[in-house]
Image 1 (tube, rainbow, N blue to C red):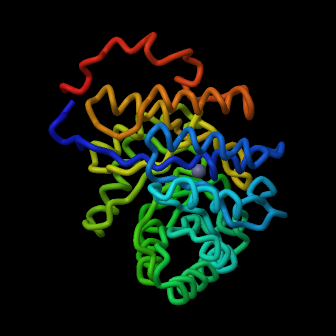
Image 2 (cartoon, rainbow, N blue to C red; image 1 turned 60 degrees about the vertical axis):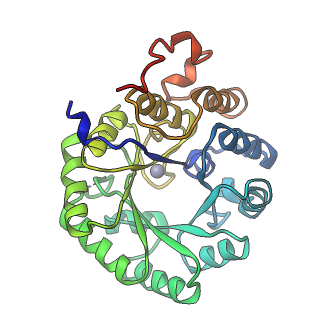
Length: 312
Ligand code: ZN
């Protein structure tokens, strides 16, 4: 492996509170959600997408967004707090709750955008423009869904990704997350898309958001690292999924990614043992059937046989 091409440091944004919880049908009491998020912060997570300001009719699990955001601001001012918002109303509520950054969702595929947020690209982009004009202090990250493939329209052409990204940046989005919403990307495709985006926008530093539907989450992560990506979005235990994307599985798990990076000598600032406590709490109290690999481990120490992984 060409190690000199790999970054020394990676930012892992944990999205358990949003992508992880949104797809769980049974109501998770707010205190239980907070207990998980607190453990993640204790483990060293410093950027977190903790909730979503969406219609509670559409996604009932996110009905406590205001309480979650309030807790994060009061208890963890050191954490960069992000919340998903799909429209102007969501952005208004996020700002009112003191959130500094929103993930504004638009799907690269128009068919999925319709299913997910019930809008055309033009409508989503018009709202984006209004949000950035009305809230100049709010950071707006474009969370671009179905970048690699769509359950309704198949593989997404790179040209479509680039076009939508241009449109969003022109309307005031300042960064982008490239999301493999249904988990169909492969490492070659990841490199092709990432390289096309970076060639067009060299200063942008996109984040990658990978679902592990076909077991390629970490392989895609490695491909992205080799293409210069240093920001990833993951969920503890491998929770996650999209209520409007049939067939999607969970996110690449935070602890599996941190484990891989740590063993490769790439620092994340996150303590794996503490991260496993969060996965353990999720497994015990929220979802016993986690897909993350490490979530089944009793303790990390029992198989941490590469103590010198930092000297790569
Ligand atoms: Zn996702």
